[in-house]
Image 1 (cartoon, chains in turn yellow, brown):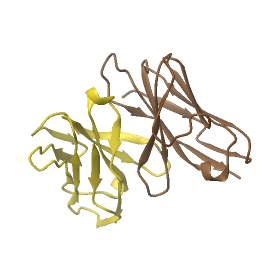
Image 2 (cartoon, one colour):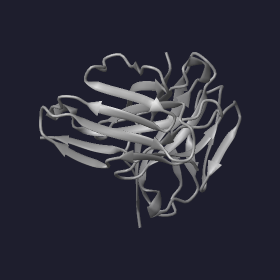
Image 3 (cartoon, chains in turn purple, brown):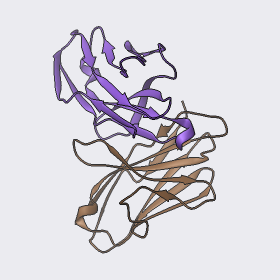
Length: 113
Length: 116
């Protein structure tokens, strides 16, 4: 079946530290991959996406590269800010299988000043 | 980006009553809407998928008679939690897409339901 696995949180970093949140997936088809961010008490916002192998999604200093050989889509940011504190969800979607988003369990990030 | 408005953001209801949650796409046609439930510190669990004008497709284990979904127009879907019980307390989130334009999924702000 299709599934997404993220590293467990919470992840606590100091401001300006380097961030990596690991995400791996299994898929029966050819998925598009996404990172969503959820701030406290809110819905989800799309952070970045990649639709084919070797694509790099980027937004607001965050990056993730679609690695088909390792079935991974790790999220990185070179220098985190306090305002990046949130829960981050990795997700996949296979368009010819109903187009449902399948989410990982979420990783909580806390950035301290 | 496109806006999806979910209402109410918070609701408290008595056990045994029904609660309706609305999800509106404000600036695009939502051909497909999804309803999720999120438990504390947990991922989003897809409850059902609804296509405009059709009956919703429920995920395994979700009671369709308890969680009534209506998607009668291209801008509005509703989730009604019938005969709510404390175990239905949760954070409910909707998302919407325009499949004719192959848009990404846009999410509502979520509704915190507390059943007392």
